[in-house]
Image 1: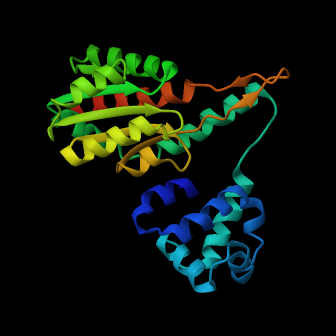
Image 2: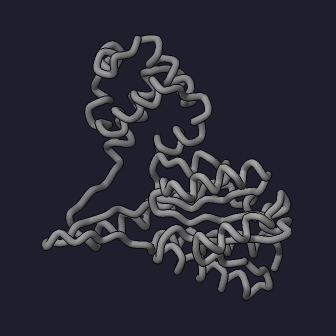
Length: 248
């Protein structure tokens, strides 16, 4: 499991000091695994005991285990300037991410839902949502595609605790979606998120997270390239796991 996944999993336990330390760690993983607990505490302006408690909150036995984890994660990350190799690396990492997902629970939720809504937070995400809707329709499981924020606002008023909403987001930090997800949680509506593997607000609001890995690269002319192939892999995996679970 990646550090950002541990943060999202244990987010409710973390205080402002913890989040400040983790922000530094996420930005400096290659340095932090060489620091002592006192050095990290001094850099982050917190106490030694605060660092130790933070490690425990993230389900580590102590700071030494936390450091070992950071070293492993930092050294296992694969970066390249080659666009094709980056895509290959992202796909491999996405499959690793998907192996940690409890698709059985997600399939059970989808099977028992009264209605399933799905939407994406951008144009490319909407294409992924539409493809997911198409696939599930083949097995007579009909997803309601929400096309835009206006539709979301209209449909939200009729949603209830027997419904499920699948949200596809690249960053997971779109303010409008975060606000709407809070309202869905208050109604008891189950939210399933599909996001890039990073610490994000959307994933923190749901226990049902499907993570992909997609790395933004730059062309020689400075044009940003982000692949959505990992998102299509995630929805295909969810679809196939559902078929097996529901015996379609």
